[in-house]
Image 1: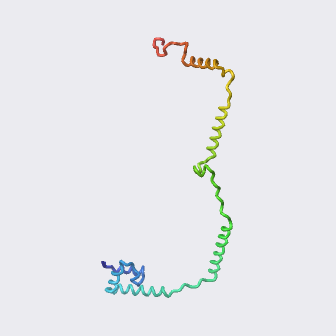
Image 2: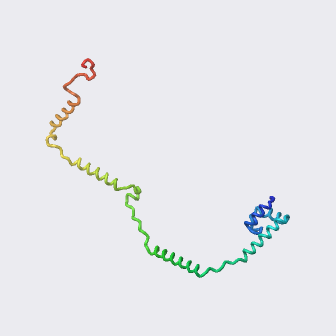
Image 3: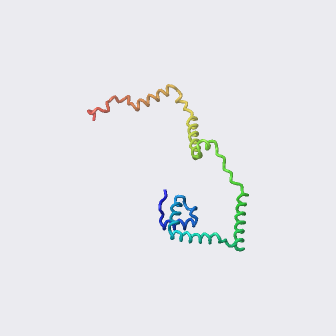
Length: 167
């Protein structure tokens, strides 16, 4: 399907891609060829672009000056020296992770270890205490239990705590 092309679009494509229509986008080539064959303005645009293309093809870059070459080579030598120094230094060796770090990640084992040590010491101190010789006697223990029960449940006072007449 061929679409029509405006002269402005033709000029825009010629400025972007040059006078060779076969180098233009494929969808624009049929319409551009039709406009170039029918329009003298389009042919003038192509002539202008052919002249520019020819001038660009004949242009040669000037030889660099000796000062520029010396500066480029000096910078290259400096970069090479920096890279050589960087290669000469061995890379830092990463510290091998410990057993727990490999399984659980780095979650700060020092505080957890300190808390575990405190817990173990407290447990050991609590278990290492020796009972008094008087409390090992069965009758003494029974008397102690009875005294505690009497204190809390009040064996001597048989009154009802909810009795309103006593108030």
